[in-house]
Every structure is written in C-alpha cells, then in structure tokens.
Image (cartoon, rainbow over all chains, first blue to last red):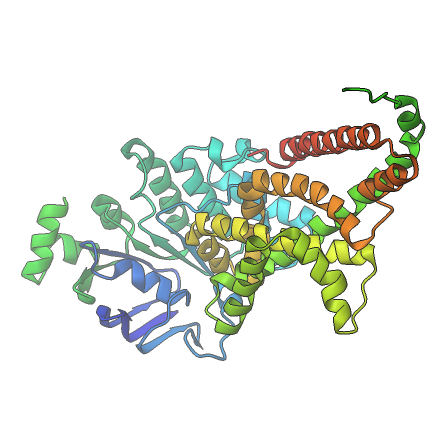
Length: 240
Length: 221
C-alpha cells in the first residue's frame, strides 16, 4: 500500500505539490490526470525517493520513503518507474538493458537474469529484439523495453510517468496495450497520463490534479461522467 | 657547400637497439595513459561536484597540466621533487610527468562528455535500485568513454611523442634516449634522428589504427 499524506514539494520558490494526500491499495490502478505543470509527474518521483519532499509523508508498505534511515536502493527495487523519455541505456543491447539491474543490484547470475529478461521482453512483445541496440528500435519499442526493464526487478508497484507523451501517435497504442495487460494481471499501478480513454478504461480510480493538489478523485464513472467540481468538468471537456 | 655523406648502414645496424627503445617508449606511454585516464575520471567528477575542496584541487591540477609546458612538468617530477628529498628515477619521473599532463587534458575531455550524457540516464539507473557509484560505473562511464574516444586517441599519440622529453631528465632507454646515445657516439645525427622520427611516426600510426579497431569492436551501438 502506498500512503501519501499531505505531501509538499517545492523547486526553489515554486511550490509544485501543496499538500497531496492519496492512498493506493495493493492491486489498484490509479491514473492521475491534469494539466501540464500541475505536479503529477513530480509526485511519482517523490514516491520512489528520486525527489526530496519539503513536508508530509509517503509510506510504501510501511516504509517511510523520505526517512534518512530508509535504504532507497532497496525500496526502489519494489517500485518500478517508467519515464516519458524512454531512457534506454544506449550502450547496451535490449537484453543487457533488462538484465543490468537484476545482475548488478540483485546479484543474479547471467543465466538467471537472462531467463527473467527474456520472459519480460516476450511479455511486452520484444522477444525478437534481444541482441539489438536501442538506437535500432522505434520509440514504442524503446518504451516497451523500459517497461520490461522495470518489471525484471519484480516490483510490487509500477509508476508510469506520461509514458506515451513522447511517442508518435501511431505508436501510442502498443504501449497502452502493454499497460492494459499489466493492469489485467493485477499489477498495482499509478499512471500519470493524458490518454483519457485509457484512464477511463483501466483505472479503479482517477485523480484529477490541479495547481499542486488533488482536486477531485473517484471512480472513472464519477470523474468522467459526473464530476463534482466545475474545474474537473472544464478540464475533461478540453482534454477529450 | 653540401658535403655531408649519408651513412645509413650505421643507422640500420642500430635499428634493433632503437626498437628496444621504442618498446620503452610505448611502455611509458601506455602506463601514463592508463593512470592518466584513472586520474582524469576522478578529476572530472571532482570538477562537477559541489565539494569545494575537491573542485579546487582538481581545478589547480587541470590548470597547471594544460597551461604549462610538459617539459616543465617532467622536470618538476624529477628535479623539483628531488629538492624535497623525493627522488624519482628518470623513468618514473617521465611517467609521473606525462600522467599528470594526460590526466589534466583528459579530465576536461571527460567533463565535457559527462555533461553530454542526459541526467535522466542516471535517474533511470537509480530508479532501478542502483547506488550512485554503480549507476556511474555501469551506465554513465561507458557512454563517457565512447564520446571521449577520439580525443583520447589523440592524447595517446601525444603521450607517445611526449616520452621523448625523457631525454631532459636523463632517460637513456627509450627511443629518444637510445637515439641520443647513438648520436653522441657516432655523430650521425641526421641518420639516427631521421630513423627515430620514422619509428615515432609508425608508432603513432599504429596507435590510430589500434584505436580504430578497438572502437569498432567496442562501440557497436
């Protein structure tokens, strides 16, 4: 369970998160929607401790993320994150991209890591690209590789930060299909996204972010069909 | 007016000795390059760090290495340190001097390369549970070496040529040293130095060729 309590985060004088609270249960799929600069992506990088926070508390399975005694490297092993820019490691083949962390962080043997990597890469439809370098892949393929790379660490949670935003429109579908597959398998996911139809379809709950706060949160039916707040309705009108 | 008679056979007879000298030249250059790269990585990281002491020390090293003659640096390693009771043999002084110089130049090359690698690469590595050193070693460093490879090759050639400065601290076993010994014994200056120049040229070319092979083997992406 991920518990976010009254989290505040600033970059210099700019306060990006102004007291965000939210709880994500095991097995739940929560999508986060909202305008650019509303703090959605920042929240994800706070959850795995890539960013420090200035107030509040984030707890993952009882571990306080920003406690200085918390072993973040250990914590991150169970929280996979995929970014908007695919961040493929260009000097490694697709297989090596995926096996690097299992081998160097978890200390797996090459054989064991290869086995897991092949399984995850098959899962995202890249079984025929194992020995290819990322520069030879399309954006959608690179992003699916990034997903497999995160999954190879067997995380309990997956965070997706606008993973289709940097893709050509015709490549968005293949990545969303991968996310749908994960959701259907019961992976706990928080997806920051601009894909409203996707949000509506896979989410257990949808959170609408506005000006550093969760403005409204509820089931897709509530948010998309009967939003309580006028700002939510206004955003959805434009976003559709 | 031009009454110098060439005596090439004398030079060619000395060729094996000169080849042995060339081996010492290559040896010093290779060691100075390996050590120089290691120090340069540390210097480049120090220059990008927020630690003021590390930044300051690295800046001094880089500034002196890049803005004073290599001859001066080698002299200091031999005679300069000697004044403080630290006595390096000519071979070690030459190695120390060229390593110092290599590290200074390569540090700036590396610093530029590090800045060319997106910070998101480190973020991605860290988010997979890698510690900062592991992320640097496995993700950043290999990319840094690729970007820096052409200037590193130049530096290697430069290191080969700089070894000839060993003469000034009395190194007699490298290619320049052996050549000078032969010169003072025979006074066939032109022949010996021309032959030495050809050998230096061939070594430099071999370095370029070797570098191309390494790059072809290593950088498949």
